[in-house]
Length: 318
Image (tube, rainbow, N blue to C red):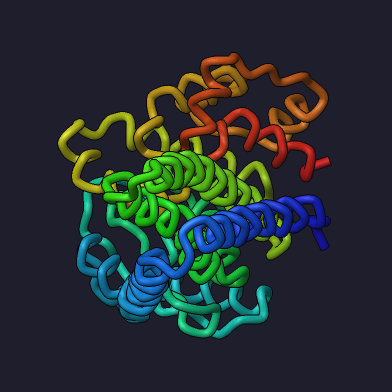
């Protein structure tokens, strides 16, 4: 079994920090202003998060134009998903086909017992069997780890701060307390958003490790990421913009596809358009340096920097 305790620790500590922030912030609001409308916004945030959690799968299905993919249409995909579900110890997810023109895959649902995995039509002709199974294994990892519920839970924190900031920044409090709390709320909102993105990136590392744990080769997953980035880079800006609000669901960040292709080309030593086991082992013994610009961009991204992500997979390969 792949050791993922560091990733779990990251998730736990970040979640603790987020809930600590909101606890002390709400306590401060209550002490400073007494019983006030912050309770109303707290309740509204919880309701919105519940609705997001409960109706989210249907919204994703509609926005990504997903239809059921029957076993008769794609028996090999159903077989791969069943094998991965057995390895993960979860019920076989529903499988769908997304009619969008970007090669990718994504998972959605409420819990590990009601998961869905969807693939887009262009991915079928782009990846070989091992690469496709590695991608499906990544998505199975998201389902196994209940990442859908985690996302709904942590997203509520910056949302609460944002609503409180709106409530108090424009209040009629004579002593200026409303403006102070509003500013603090907005600062905590920004911090919360950065922590949510950090958790999102950690989830991607965790899902990568899960795919390997379910029997897939790290090099197969890296090659798939390489090809998916290349496929997305060839898409028009209009096509990318159509799925921009849902890009966090994808295996890779389609907005950074061109940049990722450049990164992958650095480790594609023989230039054949895919990453072999040997190329990945060479990377494992090399030092990967990320520029300050890329580091800042990663802080604002839902997915890890591609080179850091591949480096981690290369270390698993060893």
